Amino acid sequence: MKDRKQIVIESTLQLFTEKGYQHTSVQDILDKANISKGTFYNYFSSKNECLKAVLEQNRLERNVLKEEILVGKKKDDVNVLIEQLIATLKIKEKYNLMPLFREISFLHDEELQEILAEHRFHEITWLKNRFYDIYGEEGKPYYYECAVVFFGTFQYLSFYWNLATNMMIDLKKVVTRSLKYVESFLPEMIKSGEILLEPQEMFLLEKDLAYKSITSKQIQEKLEKFCKKIPTIELPQKSLELSSLLLDEIKRETPRMSVLEIMLQPFRASFAETIYKYEAEEIANLFWLFIKMQNKQKGINK
Image 1: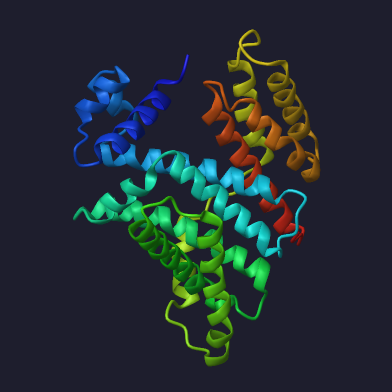
Image 2 (image 1 turned 180 degrees about the vertical axis):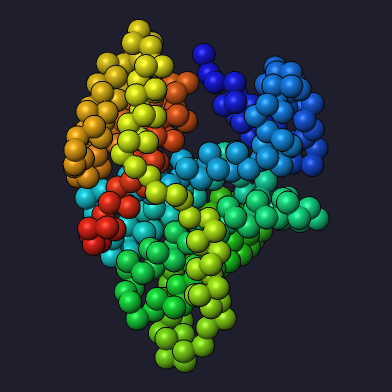
């Protein structure tokens, strides 16, 4: 049986995409999830907090997918970045998040705007780091601006594509064109030395959103609880075996990052059609954060 909090999150997302944020009440969520008001407020202090949980869960799903795409590939390959961007945009389409984002952006609610800004800043920070992987040290002060310009360009090109053609956008074409614009003006930015979004100020925002250090012990404890929770009769043998193998690896005195990287995608995929999907994604995301932290400490940039 699904975790009640997960049922609330899924019910809320469905209501937000069907009715919109404004026209969804807490009572609607209670009815959809078949829970009491007390149960809802045990998990969330408000509808806004519930929205935050919905967006965070979706962001973690996209994070895991981006890391899986990178395995065995070169970080400085722009085609890998295009593949990552397309894959994450497809997830947004899958959950019909873009209309929700547009609605929230026009609401005069300070807390909502902070939630949306935080969500977007995670995306900008990730893309800023990927620009560094691809275009190198010289353009480092300008990558925040480049990331903002990319997303703005993509958004408006997509909007007018739909408006002019009344057709679904070709994600690869629009993503590639948006990157081409960034690539074309980046040399001029470097040459002029002019910066609108000062990296020092943006870095302060990034530090506020940074994850705390993830230890192997924390992951081990979470995975052990997960392994005890999942029933052996309802799941494929592959799911159980991969969970056990991951647990054995993270228990090692020095877990092997390359082994973890290989196992994480099949581990997550094995739970994709089960009620444990989101818990498996959360665990996979913790593993990826741990891997990135360990590689950074070792000076690995692959």
